[in-house]
Amino acid sequence: MLLSPFLTLTFLLFFSSSLPAIFSTPTCSNLVPLRNRTDRISITDFGGVGDGRTLNTKAFREAVYRIEHLRRPGGTVLYVPRGVYLTESFNLTSHMTLFLAAGAVIKATQETGHWPLIAPLPSYGRGRELPGARYISFLHGDGLTDVVITGENGTIDGQGDVWWNMWRKKTLKYTRPHLVEFINSQDILISDVIFKNSPFWNIHPVYCNNVVVRYVTILAPPDSPNTDGIDPDSSSNVCIEDSYISTGDDLVAVKSGWDEYGIAYGRPSSGITIRRLTGSSPFAGIAVGSETSGGVENVLAEHINLFNMGVGIHIKTTKGRGGFIKNITVAHVYVENARQGIKISGGVGGHPDDKYNPNALPVVKGITIRNVWGVKVKQAGLINGLKSSPFTDVCLSVINFHGMKGPRAPPNWQCSDVSGSAYQVNPWPCSQLSNQEHGSCAI
Image (cartoon, rainbow, N blue to C red; front, side):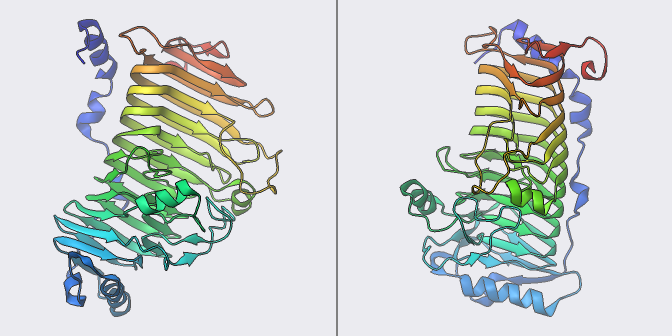
């Protein structure tokens, strides 16, 4: 689609303010530097066969066991050469690098009958989908330090369609496995790898500190259920940069526990940076929630390009969540072909059981969204707070949404139980947000 000269000029002027930041290429990836490990082993040293048919579970588990128990100074690289390595789930260990060469594929078996179970996360109180235990992630780490998953754009393939079909047929016995999950871990680096067809969420760091996910590609069909891209959960200092995600659910969703279990566990997500992300999804591009009972604060998402979306930016919670969502900044976002540009809602999400406290109300405060340009957007936005806990200090600045037919604006915003300010927003949002020509929101 060719833009008119007016729209082209407006588009360039709109993004000109971001050009210095783009050329200087800010990064948070120095949180976890890439380790130079001198000790190196290959999966073929342990009998690994990359023919796509041989089951390599024993080889992967023995290789990880060797790294864990020999404890070479500086750690060890586990090299996976070109080939397709079928395997069951396996655990990672500290001070290791899993390196996938070009053309290497680690592929999950579709024999689900003996897939191991683990306990539910304490901040969730049960499996996310079903009560009780949950299936362990395909690649799993608990209580680890200094783990790298990288390579030459090799692939980790969850072969999730068998799990999606069980979900559709309602024959699941437990909550589906994530593709990669780290629990209670720190100094985690994931880069230069393709993740595809996850059974459930793709990358899930939970109760973690210092996590970098960079230069990754995450793929799943748009109708694949709950295949979130990256979900930082009750974690701090998380850096997500320079990646492409196209899945069946939220591209990135920041979480922190579910209702009374998340409130009791009380570990927030904080210090989350999302930068230079491109993707598409029938759900949200950048999301916070809806599981935010431990609190979410200090989130920055910037330079985001979203295509064929359900919702561009979605901040979501509900009664019974408790917790807080505060100091969230989303800036320099391009949205094309979306059902809704921005949604901030206090009525999204279910509950783990009937023990939640409906009077546990979330606090949503300090939400700043600025420099957003959208074309082919059906509805500009919706901001619905809670009558008993209105959303406050919401700032919308320099936002332009265009409808399905050229430069004409999409239908107006819907707002309730919210206060804050707006500056240069088209279409104009709602009377609850004051027009601010000067002040912090007009910057």
